[in-house]
Length: 134
Image (cartoon, rainbow, N blue to C red; front, side, top):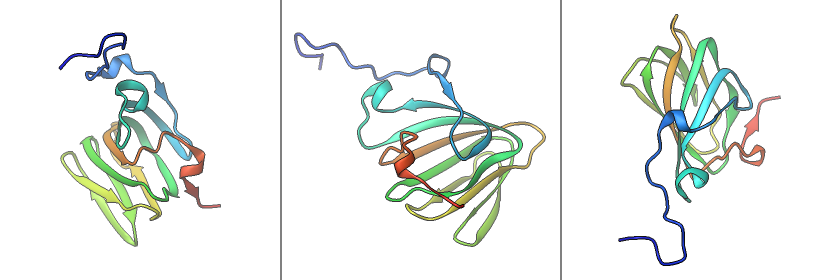
């Protein structure tokens, strides 16, 4: 199937190095790249990003009302906490942060963590879609 006449073809392939990085709010030592999003491929109901997080840094306590979050660890080690459960993550591990549930993520390895993150629906770094502990 091709793009309709008069419409630009949608993009479906994304390279990490082609996506600008950003430093997310409520995180320290973190550089994210939003790979799959409304802006990159026109995704409406899911968002995927890759994060690089330095040793001892990560996500401060926060929650995303109405947004489920999945993390898949590619490199490094980290401690994560959600709903009173604290666990160590290593490459190949996944974790789930249910919508509205406060969570924390901290890098414990000497080397930076590389983590794949999926949000549904998209978070889009929208301050109205996060609750931070004060």
